[in-house]
Length: 224
Image 1 (cartoon, rainbow, N blue to C red):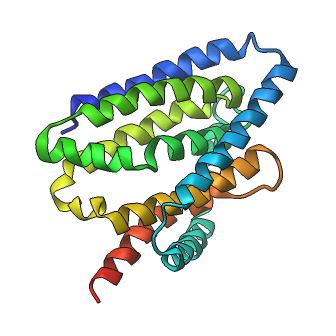
Image 2: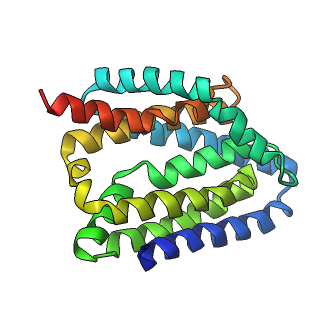
């Protein structure tokens, strides 16, 4: 069902998170705070770059509004924090999980790479992404905590499903679809950066349904 490259990517995230957790114990508090600020600023930069790839900002706005309302009704952020409370040293669990999941999954490499595997068997893009994700997981877990481990599950499920249903999802590789999906994720990543820097408590977890809404809205738009 799942391609070996998806497993490699998943294991890479776990390994990176494991090394990052070990290093975290030896990082002085002052240095950790500095590194966390660097992560926050970098996250904002990544978010801005992703937002600029959006093609139809009105559709992005609608998806964020509708998705945010659904997320609020489902209390997704609270549920994520509830999972975090089960882990020892889980302070900042939601931020770590959301930051790593979004950075690992909301990008062209994830969609194009996964669909390429399903259609052609070519795993080069996902294998390259695995190396990048392993390094990122190490940095994020060293600065943000144990939530990065759970994002490995996100990688396994999302990329695995993209591979399995690749023949039905080729429309996602279109420039407009891909741009709006990345742009929507970029707004959420930008919100995460603001949250990491403690500028405002943006409930990014409640915006997760927006990633599905932008696909649905763009698909409906394409019918007319």
